[in-house]
Amino acid sequence: MAAGYLDILRARHATRLLVGTLVGRLPSGTAHIAIVLFTRAEGGSYTLAGALAAVYGLSTAVGQPLLGRAVDLYGQPRVQLPASVLSALGMALLALAGFGSLPLAYAAVIVAGVCTPPLEGGLRALWPTVLGREDRVHRAYAMDAVAQEVMFTVGPLLVTVLVSLWSPAAALLVINVIGVLGALSVVVSEPSRTWRSAPREAHWLGALRSPGLLALLGSFFFVGLALGSITVAGVAYADDHGRESVYGWLMAALGLGALLGGVAYGAWQWAGAPERRLRVIVALLALGYLPLMLTPGVVAMTVLAALAGVFLAPAIACSFIVVDRHAPRGTVTEAFSWLVTTFGVGAAAGTALAGPAVELGGTAQGFAVAGAGGVVALLVLLATGRVLAVPGRTPVAVRVSENDRNGAVEPGFSSGHQA
Image (cartoon, rainbow, N blue to C red; front, side, top):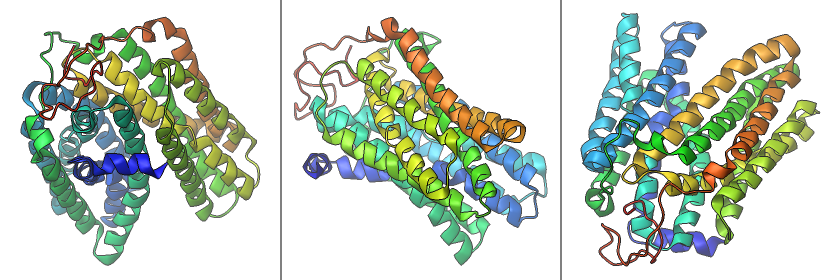
């Protein structure tokens, strides 16, 4: 199992790109908790903290596909690094100006969100050129999904350490400086500098003109909704049991399950169309969410949370493959960015729905939102099976991709750089 991942990490540029992308995404992965802690430290209310965090999330959702399209048009360095710097400056403005002017605080958060660089989509666009063989790229997608779980676990811990050592304002500044350095590490690398998207057909819809991609995005909106609702229902469950630490255990178990599932998924050689495989994985994901409605004792609930997380990273990793197959020519970064946006908007919707569900029907109803989200995600994939069965781009037998100077791309594998 480990040998396959080591094979990827030994590939030239692979470790640098993976680590640089994760470090570059640290500000976006920790922004919500950093904003809340800073707002409370400055005397702001929970309502203000939540509003600022929500504005940041929505701004990021708007900016990701727009910047992703810009990357496809102009290349990675011209977009990723300036966006990273502008996003960091937005957060720096918030940290230094505070809440003397609320419009200025909101403007700073909007700039930080809209300018969040699409490093996720950029990395996935680079993998085919860096790794070549299709099986290695698919394993890299799984490793990417696992690395996300690690980042979302380590990132908040790093923020809390910085807050305890210095202050919430210092945490905002340090995290964003680190993020700029991560983005810089990526964009000065040879694969990022030489990567060019395939020529694209001019169309105002961009990647969204692909019916298969729209079907996938529709499904993953509800996967995000399920995950977002669990974060709220988990708080209610912890309140029911009188211990805040219970929430931490549930979230850690969910992340551990996703990590183990992603590692196992990436180690296996899969045959057959990824679209069919994705339906099976999402079905298992939905099946894992449904037992959470039982809300048993803490130990049993922690086990259920771990089981619920097992198929999350595999679903995300498999979705990356489907995105690459259905993204119209010349829109691969934009397409990946739309997946990030849709998942994030779904998570925000799940958070919004789970709150009233808990207040009206109790904790079990909050977890019922998660179960319903998983089921609807599966139904969308089943209803659009015919559309998903036809990839937007047909791979052609090529010897070398546009930017693969070593001729490493396997013949017949679509790297996102050719039709």
